[in-house]
Length: 132
Image (cartoon, rainbow, N blue to C red; front, side, top):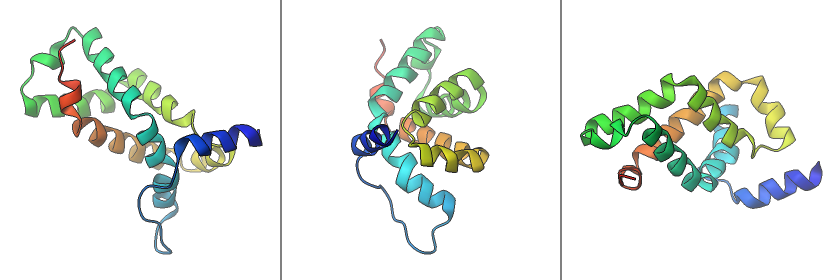
């Protein structure tokens, strides 16, 4: 399993964000693990969201900009199956050690993960806004 962990860490690249002695365990996990994974998987997240929006009868594409932002947040917060799919796309890039750390505090880490993903998608609304 060491080979897999090394490959995963190599794919993800460097730590994103600041880690110092005052950083909480969750903040360290966020910057060491979650941010690099979200960056690595970014293009896939955008395509997955576009596919989701299309399968929901293209409603998203007819909304005004403010409602599009609310739609992104609402869908990720309320559609459990979709949210779990997104979580799986992140967890798949955990090392075994990170997974052990994650399961100790999964509730708070899931909140951080989804909030960062929501913000990431909102910041890329131009890419999502292309009607398929």
